[in-house]
Image (cartoon, rainbow, N blue to C red; front, side, top):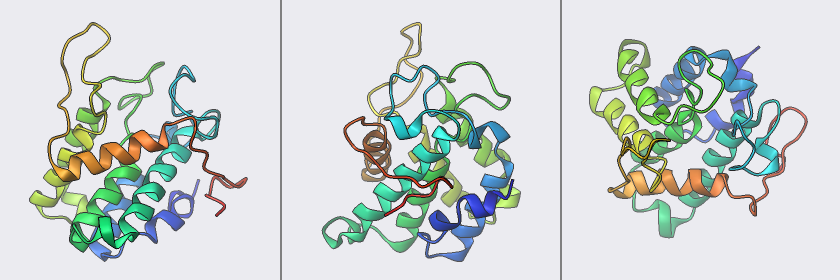
Length: 193
């Protein structure tokens, strides 16, 4: 599987080479299941395009595309620096990279945002980013679940978004999970418009 080819279009949304390179390095490190499992283990929480073989990858591609489109609007995008935009877009592509754990588990790991943030710090040396940039990525990924902070036992596990960056990443992920927003994909898992 040529992972770079799978995300070629999405890498094109990133303007800063070091962020583009870091994103590709993370993609190379993700477990194989990220590229083949559905976005929802039960099928309840995502639109049809995010179900079935490759659904999680398609959900992630939809999230980054929604972010890219929103940031292309000067009324929204001008509130962020180019680095902030690229880091948020990278976060959207990789936010669910460990959704089923470091090793594939049957169901979604509720703490997958925390796992992904830790994974980035654990791989700091291969990313080529400043520690502050990795922390930024971790901060927006840790809160991408928005108001859904309780685990299956009702314990508060995740933080709610507080910053404009955290809220933006959550919003894009949320929109990519709505059944009323249909994103057209071709047979190679690329957005077709």
